[in-house]
Length: 349
Image (tube, rainbow, N blue to C red; front, side):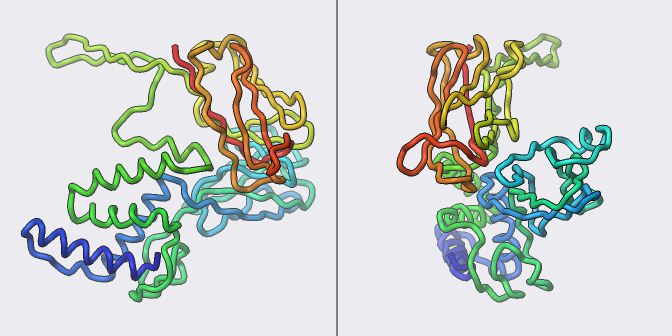
């Protein structure tokens, strides 16, 4: 949708709401509306992780810090050729014994307000590191329109399109209205939840944003009242395992990011082990973790940056010890090699 169109729609809806409520309509102004539109896009991006950016870094021998793109928000994963690069913390990479070699790990390192990519070991050759990241949308800046990565504002002129795809137009409008009418906040939240449920692919980070409802946890909390008596709130003990994995050649899949793992901490059996058992067939082994009749498997999501033509994946319950992952190409044949598949397994107590 054009920015001018969302602006016009917002003004019309404000006039309608003012008439319905019997309240006077006041002109919000183009600059203030522009700020609200940029806030709306930022909020939706933060909640849904809609826009994924890619950026190629050419490593330099002896250099371990590299600049990020202007719109860099949060590092998702990285690849050198077909090899996924593990994401670690900057603390671990900086405190490890310095060595030179082929890059195998990376982290986000922020100096002041400038994010950088820190790699480990210090590279000894020139290679291309492709990073995938969540885009951080900018606020409206009327004095410097060139800095507005997210659209086509030119000063106060409403030109160009929203950065978000058209399916998010309603959410943008509801956000704008929620800043004027408090009762639209609930409508905006409901639209965000609906969009979450309909996202076909991408990072499970998109699904972890909560609106006042706590995620299921595997513990019991106690609160003491003013009278000194103790109230105990029992939370669900469901165990959740949610990771991003990558795979190349005939190697076993590797975890590129762990989002949730209450599976290991609760039952104390170590961590799940990934293996490749055939073309496009991989196992997740964790002795006794997957209780029969109480293990729920969610359809895996495949990242849009594909290695080949993998287009589908499925999880299959094999036993209390093993979950099987199968990956298929466009003609439904098993295939190896993928940048990022997102796995989610939930086990009831």
